[in-house]
Length: 356
Image (cartoon, rainbow, N blue to C red; front, top):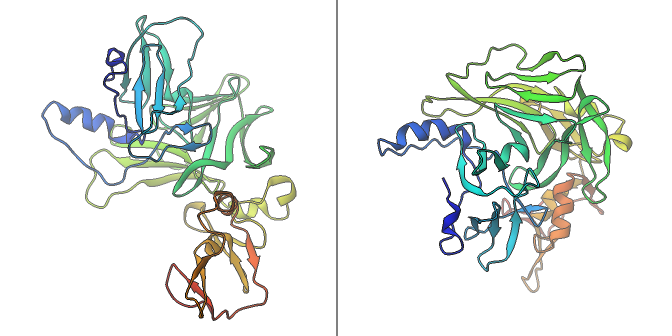
């Protein structure tokens, strides 16, 4: 629990990678002074500093101030992010706390919530969480597996349908949906582990899982819109054995590559981009490869040209140019190498070997 009386004198450092599936287990062990560790942690919420990128500096700090805002600052004291308020009322802050559900809340003295992470989801929802069409609630994927910047896939309601669609990262334009679920106005992830949709006549329709019965007394659950556009429902045992990891119970669409065939003009470039070979493999996740004589943007980033005369190293589309890197992460488009290989002067920095 965070108390605002600490004010500006003792800023409280808060980890934003909420390992929520451990909350109940950690709570039960804290009183006995025991600390546990399970390696299969999962980030379920994060703050977008300056509206786009999450903070990565280890010395960044979060502070609960007397106005009821959670404020994120970099090591120099510059404000990067500030929580919104759920209401405009002048509620006085009492404290902030992580609940056993994984919901991080800022509570007021009148027992209401000034802010809560469940009302501002990122790419994941947890049992007890809902997405409302009326509030324009949605999930937004991360940009890449190791980048929590804003991605290009969104789960949202549109004209009475729950849909998945791609968003143009530069123009902000939403493409048509590449996958549609049931009609409805509210997505409910109930505490029993079922994901349901409330339809127009007030009935609850089970969306997932399809061929399994959730066991919340034995498992933790989360649903995440992955960086490559697949919505996945996973479980993790409350009493895991060695080597346990998240288990996929359900995913949609079943073949995201097929959904984009011949429709990239209206649906977006898809998970692999233009000139690429897309193949849905394990749990519907796409595997992207390039045709012969083509090279992916991400591979180009890791290639360096070495001059035989000066031995100087020149990076092509390097990480030093954030715009080029963002383009690379935005699309796995394959680029034609002209003239075709071999390139005796190109060295792949991932393997250290010459490219043939």
